[in-house]
Amino acid sequence: MYTMELTVPEHQCDTRCRMKLGYVLRNLQEVATNHFSLVNDLHDKLAWKVHFFIASMHLRVAQLPKMGQPVVLRTYFSGPKGVFLVRNTEILDADERPLVQCSCNWFLVDAASRGVVKPKDSPYLLPQEPHDFPITSPRRIRVEQPLELTDRRRVHYSQLDSNGHLNNAVYGDFIQDLLWERLDERSLADLEIVYHHEAKLGQVIELFTTTGTDSSDIVGRVGQTDCFTARVTLHR
Image (cartoon, rainbow, N blue to C red):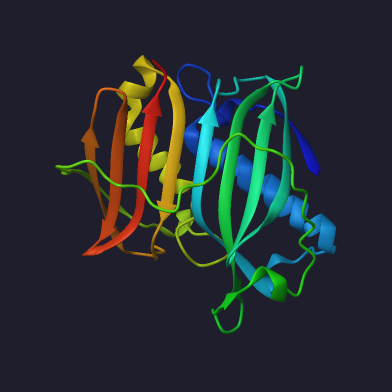
């Protein structure tokens, strides 16, 4: 298990001094990368033989971290699930109470061929710790209908990551921008995302939403291809 300490900086927070959703996802990504790099003594990410692509995630939020709050991020691989590798991560307060819990399904992609690599065939160490965890990541999300076109977002260079596509955390920015009024009125309880297809530089993502009493569904599409599906559930 790997831990990383963080004092929540101002630039990561919204108008109510809570960590923005996109930065929650960025910090979860950073602690995962740091863990894998440390275990395998890797320093140059461009030299990695495999890349990690996220397939799906489930985020459960008791309370978003606040500006200036010291927190600890704790992460580990819980084991393989078919071609996927499950990573569980928590953001804890100073008393080790979970503020945010996240379970993700990742898959490995060969850096040269771009083919999927099974966890058992990984060229790197993937140490597994089978701890109990209260949530699992979804395989699919059945979207409520009808969907309404709500926004369009072009993929810009500053949003790309070292894999050459739109970084998965940017979808958190999209979701917060679409639902900021609801998220201000009633705080986030759960976020589930299934990532279907990568978005590339210059592509335009159309964002469709449908809203119920306690939840909202979002679908992002490039042309006729779904990039992601998300479900946001609010605290009662």
